[in-house]
Amino acid sequence: MELLMKILIPVGVFAALGLVLGVMLAIASRLFAVHVDERVPEVLECLPGANCGGCGYSGCAALAEAIVSGRAAPTACTVGGGACAKAIGEVMGIEVGEVVRMRAQVMCSGTAEFAQKKYVYAGAADCIAAANLGGGDKLCPNGCIGLGTCVSKCPFGAISVVDGVAVVNYRKCEGCGVCVAACPKQLIALIPYDSRHWVGCKSVDKGALVRSYCDVGCIGCQLCSKVCEADAIAVENFCASIDYARCTGCDKCVEKCPRKIIWSARKQGRGLVISREELENN
Image (cartoon, rainbow, N blue to C red):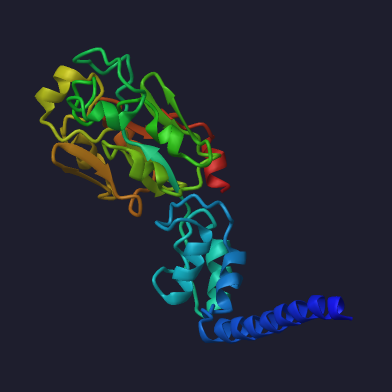
């Protein structure tokens, strides 16, 4: 009997201690509980789950919290597109306007055939590392370095490097914008998915200088802007750019450009891997 009591007493003490600690933990969980808005998991369910970071947040869960708290718009997820934004709007009880599908476009045409180089680069295969070494190996200070930093960053495998310039596979591109942030030369832009034209250059040098280092760089001649009846082209800092909302796709700028760097779906421009018909049907 004495031996049994020696066993039961410690067991009873530990049981009582466990009960007290359990009650204390239950009370603490209520006192220090973090309230989670029930809409957060609902918004998260609407998101595509790509966790690409294109929205500026670490992942879809962080974006869902930001949307519910009002720090991000329901349209913040470009990967999800209009259907995703509409579903989030329904959860949030707000009306969401039309979402324009975007795609990445590399604004450089200076392939190995056309762009002059100033030295032979033999460092790390990284555009940022090369940019820190005199701005890269191309004479053009605004040309694509072509070492594929954007390729490694793209979460959808939509970018490759061809002849020293990055190109985008539109079928795979989700318009997340990760490549835009990754490019040290800021040569990649998000443009409307169904854009018919784009200028394959972002040089800001005068025409004479551009001619010395690139056979296709924009020289700021303004012939494209003069022929554009929709007033959709402007030349600033010696380089043309297109207002995609105004562009009618008439092709007059493409035909007039003496440097042949205004690309079009009809012309099968550099980087285009889908037909005009496919663009129109998306």
